[in-house]
Every structure is written in structure tokens, then in C-alpha cells.
Image (cartoon, rainbow, N blue to C red; front, side, top):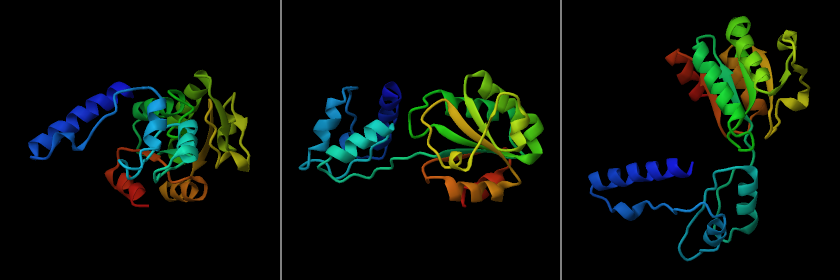
Length: 206
């Protein structure tokens, strides 16, 4: 993320220049040293607000130590919904990356919802790939037929694991997925995997 931040900053600076705005209006603190965070948290004369983006440890640190105003979101109960119009390769890549790349961050996937029309094709493939990657899958009743899954309980649906664990269940349709996310999610980050533009728009406008 350090190198990505540098590239994003460079693009933003070029955008400012092309718009005739001061190029230093957006600045990057070029360090990985966490002490820099502690120093920024105390800079009441220079910083109006801090929005921490990272794992639970970082967000908790900012909330405890900040002397400047903070916009913080501590829990990330992130859902991925695989729609009936999902591309199988995209679905597999997205779910594996979102669950296994960095399990300890608030943006990691914690619950997988699969449209019932694709449970025997895309759904089973994704669940088996998760199991093969060392992820514990806590599954709803329909998915329990897949060898290696564990039975999900009610507590699993709204849980932030921050670990190689994911809850998974079959959903009747997109509106059922939206209802599930409204009930159990944390309004942090949610995803639909679909090739249907209308379905994507409906999901985003929920």
C-alpha cells in the first residue's frame, strides 16, 4: 500500500496541476513509521480531521490517542454477494483475494452470499477454493453439503473474524442479499459480483 499511495499521490498532483490548482494541496507523508501517526494525532494547529484507514489496531490507536477530530469506522463486516449473472473467474479471484490477502484488516471479506441459481456451479467452486486455501468456511444449511465446511450459527452472520474464517450462505435473490447485509453488515464495504449492470445499480442504490 505504501508504493500504491505514492503512485496515487503522483496522479492527484498531476490532476491539480492540470486544473491550475496548487500541487501541494494534497500531500503524502512518505514513511511507514507508526510514530508519524502519533505525531499527527497531536497536531491540533495544523490538522482539522483525521480519517484512519487500516486494521482494528490502527483505528483503535487513533481513537484512543487523537487530540484532533476523527472520523473512524472500527468494524468491517464486509459482504460479497455473488449474483446469478456473475462471471465465474471474477467471482473466484475476488473472493479469494478479499478473504485471504490480508485477513486482519477491516476491508477483508467476512461473509459470502451466493445466489441460489449459481450455487451448484460458481458457488461450489468458490467454497472449495476457499477450503483449499486454508479458509474455514462456516456455512448455511445448503452449503453444508460441501465436504469440509463447518455449520454456521446465528452469531456468525454479523461477525468480524479478522482471520482465515468466512461465513457463507445461499440467498434467494439480490433483494434477499441486500436485506441480509442491512441486518448483519456494518456499512463499511460490500460488494456485488455481476455482469448485469441493472443488478449492480440496484445493489449500489440499496
